[in-house]
Image (cartoon, rainbow, N blue to C red; front, top):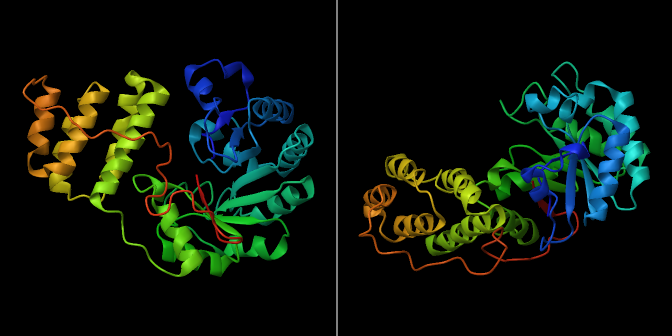
Length: 335
């Protein structure tokens, strides 16, 4: 289980968002906490405190392209300062007795690709594994990921290398692993709305068999579990708001003519019960779902409440084979 990125500035940990990100109770193991910052001492201190809070792996973010992160010389901006990279990695590795991993990009820009140099610094600093996204910071998420740089790094290093970028299906995962020689792959945006993709990839890498997409009834239950988990974790007020973007991801493959009006109406719902009711109607009576959800949003009291509820499972990642371990060199990591 990998956490959301947490700032290394512990003075900011008192915000509600940070407190939630630092709460690792009931999380799956191993628990990896990703930290971001640009000061070696602060990064080391943040790593120690996260281990005290239950982190079993510390992951250092040097791959985030977001402007608000790079403006603070953190995330992928660090790749411009190799001496600072070395100082941070050495400080964090020395500060904790758990594995420390690193996430980077191929470089700052197309003419400044220094992933290999950063990778060598990481290995000599004691980094346990390195994940590389196949784009530069300048690319953000535009264009296509390239895997030549990842292959070059893999051929030069001895630590495990994890390939990331544009891996959106089981076949692509296998192709990227074969092309780069990577020890594992990391799935990011492709898992948004399709958390079962990780199980599909793991199954294909292990057995060479493509699994069909989960039945609609399975997708419905996964969505209910996920939305219910958001309500429980964030509280109903924030959970209802955060659930809206996740519903958009789940329905991104649905016909646009059906989903646009439904999403618009769903975004007006203000409580968890109404969100469950709308989701169930979408799956069980799709032709009526838009009008029903619009009436729910308008405060209509003639709608039969939903009966389907999420079960008690916290695992929404693999509808096909929950909890199935990946084999060596065929590990699937969801970001």
